[in-house]
Image (cartoon, rainbow, N blue to C red; front, side, top):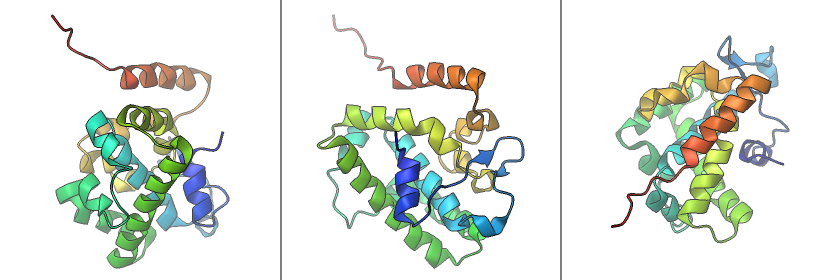
Length: 188
């Protein structure tokens, strides 16, 4: 299965976006010449924003309904938008204008990929889609971005979320089950 990270990287002309090493909290690729640091920061950061936004099915249902002029970065990150743009620009060693433009482009790509992958999605299917993608998103997210602080969710920066292997895989499966569980109040 091609993940949304892979699809986003391919749209950037990158064959494969490297994972972040959970021990060093840096790219698993040793030479910085081999990675596109802007894409490495933007793609998982924007996807983390959509993940967090989609935890509410009503919010998730809004994603495909918005038009291409929607400022998703403002919607996803609100007052923290400028801080995130600065962190991404510093990480990638680019201007804040370049980082902001790439983030907007990435957000539009996410919406297009959702429509392509899910057809005519509703809030529930979008929430499940991002729940299924969460672990993969976090495995590519540089710690320097501190997305957990931006989105008020410290689990996003937790290095254990970036681990893979048999035991970690089992734990991520359990975590995914709890993340996708809908808790409704019983009707009397």
